[in-house]
Image 1 (cartoon, rainbow, N blue to C red):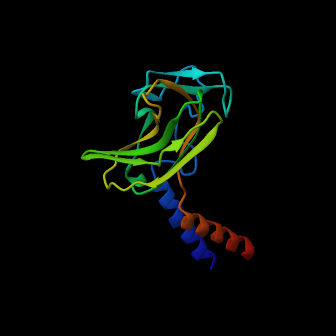
Image 2: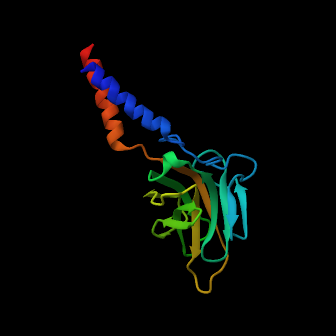
Image 3: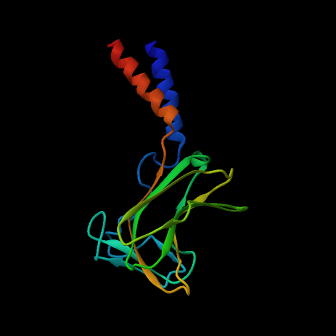
Length: 196
């Protein structure tokens, strides 16, 4: 029995070793914007992106997005390898509006491959002047994805559309550990412990 447990655990650990990205840890750099600049985050359409010390969920700084049109965004690209295809990723972030004007926000985990892009995106969520958490989970579905992009996207809802400001903080992107593998590892460890 002990040999079977050790063998099963070895196979599972070999599967984890094949994965290119660590499981269950934040894959993003500068996730709470505590560095002097926003790097490696990139701007997609915003008037400006800047570090803010007005308010933060984690640490003393957050990212201020000065937006003016639909689909303005901030994003961070991340290369992935063959061991991460068809894995489930979860993105979570905190966000609040600096004005009491209507704005909606969504999370995106975009897949890039040599033959196209898949825009995996959460539903739009109305954002107010208090911090709220947005979370989105998706399983990659392209067979040749070589990069993903973690995206925080916004769209003003006033008419006519006018510029506004959001604060974003504590952004997380993780590869979700497979529940079956974690269960088997836990059971194997329990059986080994009981045998002692």
